[in-house]
Length: 234
Picture 1 (spheres, one colour):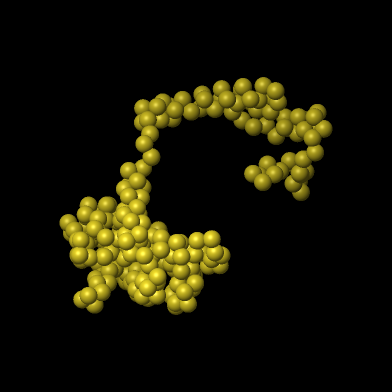
Picture 2 (tube, rainbow, N blue to C red):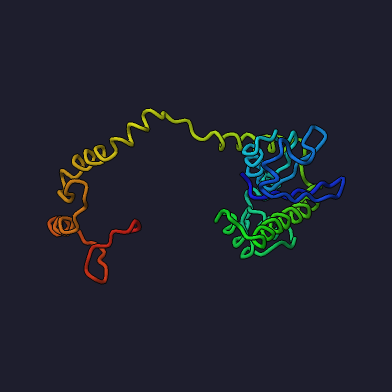
């Protein structure tokens, strides 16, 4: 469930600031999402996932400025990336700094409980994205092919459903794999290690590995203590 939500209604000029407990009490979005409205977001599948978690009907029309920015710069270098800050910088629009944004993201991911000051900071952070989005929309709108953009918006709604449903999996087979995972590992090790003799059961033995390297005349990167380096890059 989203921690908070901030929305700006263009026609009325009103800004809606809501916290989690308020959102959970609502059956639908507190703003128009019907056929005569346009829901604007940046990377809209995230917002659509919030709608799904709250049990709200998804907006009829979605304009995702992330998709439109990706279209506009396709094949071109994007020094600051494709995120909201990158799009703002590419179009010469001021936004919060990357450090501020990362700080707020970390606070949101930390989870509750939040102090009153932290909660207020999170809502303010959400609103700063909404304000930036309005500036970005004004800058991008003259070049947006709206009929095609609405198709891309429909796709982002579909992506939210895909992410909510997850990957189909054979749960019975997964349960069996989990039960027998140790046996499967041991069987695999025994078959592959037959030619090397490095493992003892499921345990990797450094001394056997060093003996194998020496016997085969294989040079290997050594640590300052003289042990073979076993990190992924090596």
